[in-house]
Every structure is written in structure tokens, then in C-alpha cells.
Image (cartoon, rainbow, N blue to C red):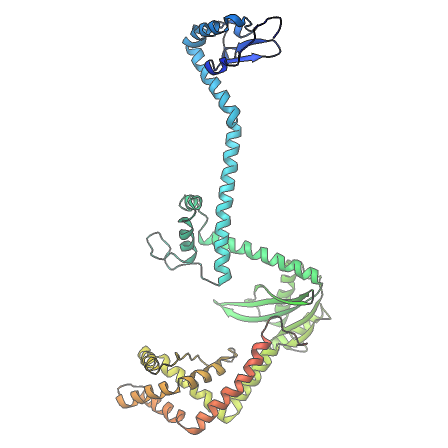
Length: 441
């Protein structure tokens, strides 16, 4: 180095942390005094640099003991500043550290929200209720959503930290908001597929739910020769249910989804006049906007109407289903009758009787009721006989009437005939309800 035979030795870095060597000046400086020092500090180590390599060790030791370097309060502060400077080179300055902490905070919250959404999607996909009756911390069961979060806390410490913090994003309002966001995302994907298909058909049905008239809107479209049927949403039509209002609601909903400019080639509803009317029905008014939207009365619904009319007008079938309805009512109340029936079924090793009320909208209930009575005929007769013999029930007269009817050969034959006929019809009914089914099949 320079004209000297001696040179700076890097070993001094280990002993004197404050030194720094300049290759350009071939000299040693005191970083602490040079950067943070005052006027009383040694100029050799702050301005010109020390170059006497022979006395290097001695000079370093002497400088370390100088008041300006070690003894004064000023230098102690300088040393602290130097430590802070060295630390900042490793971890960054305060702004960088705050920025990094903010990034970590964002990543942690994103991970937490992702887990929340995964729980939400699982419950929604499985059709499981979110809320519980009592959701406070003392409750043994706070509802499926919060209990699932609690389970996740046991396996993910970071999730547990946020969940048990002041803000955990699990209030009913935020649950609904997250569900709505997920629904919008799914709906957006469906809209993209519809636009790709270039045309679609619509299906609507109206029903009352929680004192609100709702119209469900479903669409069918084809991509790569595969038929897809998708539910888009419910439309609130509580204000008016006439054809003009319903069509206006449908068109407004399609406009919001930005698919109102895509051709509708078919429409399908039930047989209600407001929907199917050839002059002022929904199907007629919608064709004013979409001329190619041919109307098709729901095939499964038409088949069900045939079954209903047959059951109401054929004498023997009417007797069978009136009796099945009486059996359902008799064993539905009180509970002790149903309990007695279950005990007899267990003794006879029979399947549990599952009767339902006869309904025009439950398309397969008649076939299921026929099957249930046939499979549990012996247990029904035994329980009814027991009620008649005991004669301590106010409904014993009804039990006598049911027993007298079902033990007639005519009833048994008609019951089996109806079960056989409805079994064949039920195959067609289920086939017509398959989402991917077409008239071509």
C-alpha cells in the first residue's frame, strides 16, 4: 500500500469495531468520530486518516481511551448512533421496518380471510346452516360457522391470533357480505360462460318465502355440446305479480348482469295463466323483446299434472290416496302413536315408516307413500289393532275406519297397482328433472 512496506491488517476489525479503512486514501478512520464526532475529536481519525502502520495497534488503543472517543457523554451517544446505523443496514431504517411490518400485517390478514372464505364455501357447498341459536362465548354450540372457526384455531396459530383479537370479521353482517361476494364471483363466471355460448334459455318459478314473493331465475346454455343449467338468483316481486311486472323484473335483472343483449331462444315456466297465457302472459310479453324465445311448459310439471288429475278422477286411486293421507295424519299426532309404530317396526325388523303429506307440488310423494305403506303394512295393522283393543284413545274411531279400509282386498290390490304404475311414471319424472336432459334424448 502506497510507498510503505507495511499495510493495514484486517485483524484489527475484530478488536476495534469502530475503525474503517479507505482504499483510496490508504488510511484508517474512526467511523464513530468521523460521522458523529464533534470539534474536540482527533482530526487524524476524522479528516486526514491514520497511516503509520507500525504504530497502528498502539494508536488504536490510545484513541479508544480518549475522552472525546469513549469518556464523554457525547461519544456514548455517538456509539449508540453507530450501533443504530449498523442495525439499520441489516434491518433497514424505521420507515423500512414500518413498511415491512405493514406488509406482514396485510399478508396475515389475507391468509386469515382466505381461511374464513374456505370455511364459508365449504358450509355453502354442503348446504349447512351458518348461524346458531345462541352465539355468545358461553354457548356450548355457537353455530356451524363459528364452531368451524374454533376448530381451525386449534390447528393454525396465526388464525387463532386474529380470530381471538378485537376484530375477527365473523359478525352476521360480515358473514352475509362474504357470502354475497362469493355469489357475485360465481355469477360473474356464469355470465362469462353465457356470453361465450352466444344464446341461452330461461326458467322461472315463483314462490312465497318469509312473507316475500320471490321469483327464482335459472338459465340453460350449451358449451362444446354440453348442456349446463345454472341458478342465477332470486328476484323480489312482492310489489306485484302480474305478467307485466314479472317481465319487467326479469328484463331488469338480465340488464344488471349485462346479458340482456344476448338472444334468449327458449323460456320455460309452469302452467299458471300469468306465466303461460297466450295473449298477456309472461311468455307472450317476453317474446316482444326476444322473438325467438319459444315457450315450453315444464315437462316434469305437465307429467305431474297428469298424475294429479288421474288420482283425483279415478275412483279407486282417489280412495287409495285419501286413505294414505289418513294414515299419515293418524300417525303424525300424537308422538306416542308414532313411537309405538316404530317399536313394532323394530320388532318385525321392518324399515322405518316415512310417510309425507300428499302434495301437488311434491312430484314423487305419492309413489313414496305407496311404497312406505306396502313395506310397513304388517306393523301398521298391528298398531291399529292394538289401539282398537285398548280403546283408550279419542282417535280410536279413526283407527277403526283406517283398519277396516286397508284390510279390504280391493284396497290392497289398488295400492299395489298404483305403486307399480307410479313407479314407471316416477322413472320418467326423475329423468325429466335431470339438468342436462334434452328433448333430443
